[in-house]
Length: 189
Length: 203
Image (cartoon, rainbow over all chains, first blue to last red; front, side, top):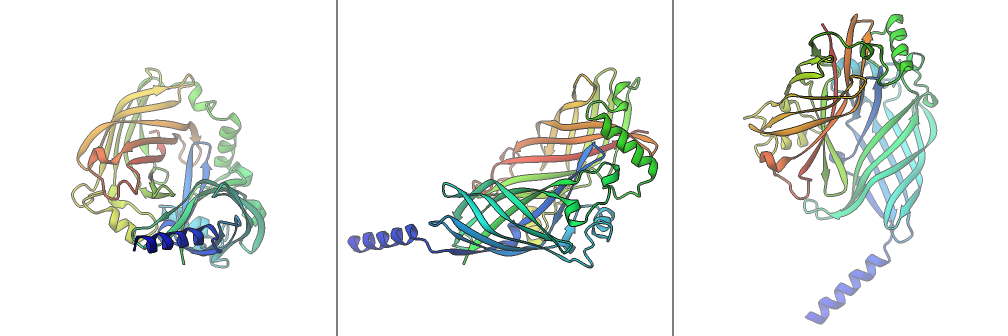
């Protein structure tokens, strides 16, 4: 029996060492994109998109990955209804005409066994531009709830909003570049 | 990008403040004589908490608007801050998470719908900007000392309101186990990081 389990353990180890590409489906409870925008040089306004869906494929052995993620722009939530409404209007995100934003990426940069950077293309308001997501945290763990591996982290990207046609407020000092903060966790399929 | 309609005057004021740069805002150059009591702006006063989830990603939730008052006497370099933090308003973007957070082993919102922060120890920088506010944080009915540190602070003359507005971004850290909110430890961090946006309007 002991020998058998030892062999089984060896088999598992071998499987882990020669990992095939694995697909992870984003966990909606732990996958959110938020942004920050300075308010008249005083404080920082924040907003969050409540609905993000998508999949990530990672080959740990080959250190490659890809992702396809969709953000529901109609799910914007700033905590202040009037502010959310204004940003959602055609003056800015125009969510009635562009209800989704789409991120695709095929270049994953690893630091050891952790994803450190993701280079991709972001489509917002129908315009597509390259973006770089930098990891500030990255980890994988065995979830005691879903009994599967979960990988994820925190990522940040700077976007130049005028590239996507969002120029509101540029002429009175609101910055063109803004920080997007991404929490993401994906469950292995 | 305010929810307010922006007039040309606001635009000019904002530009003036932005061009002056942080710490050089005109309102800071001449400290008002005597204490001034500011009213918190509900559109720009929120607390976001951050906890680490399984050592992997940062779980955030927003609470607010925070209400209360702040009195600052810049000449005397003194202040008094009283905040009511409606933890019952917590929202993470996910209803099931919000419901979990409100339970008795976390925010305990049925018994304690509000947290409080009362502070009278203000530290100012040379320009008269608020650097640190130290006081007592009451959460789940238990009090403990807490410092809020300014990551940015500035005052401006708001042309729409025709009043001085002061505020900034503050942060603080506390251990939730000190207040009995232990569910999910150690998978969800004991340390809670607070990111606080605050703007307050002078009379």
